[in-house]
Amino acid sequence: MAEKFDHLEEHLEKFVENIRQLSIIVSDFQPSSQAGLSQKLNFIVTGLQDIDKCRQQLHDIMVPLEVFEYIDQGRNPQLYTKECSS
Image (tube, rainbow, N blue to C red):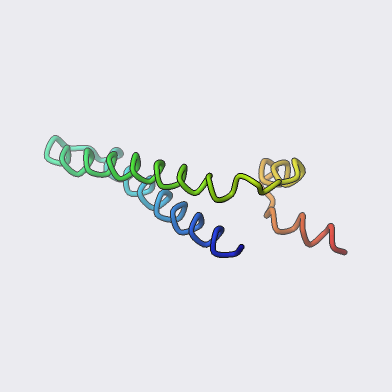
């Protein structure tokens, strides 16, 4: 079971890093950086496709709505599990 989450986590980490790099390219855009921008956008599209492929392995996972409320409040969702087990 954990392998499913590890795979998704790996793809999410790569995706977030590509978004971070994209923001750097865009914030200081020069015409000479167009090729790098295009490449980074392609990486982002591929990353979204990879994340979507993980969905098939996780379709049976149910997440309580309260976990999303924790995230919306800027809280660590692992605290929800910790508080529920206490």
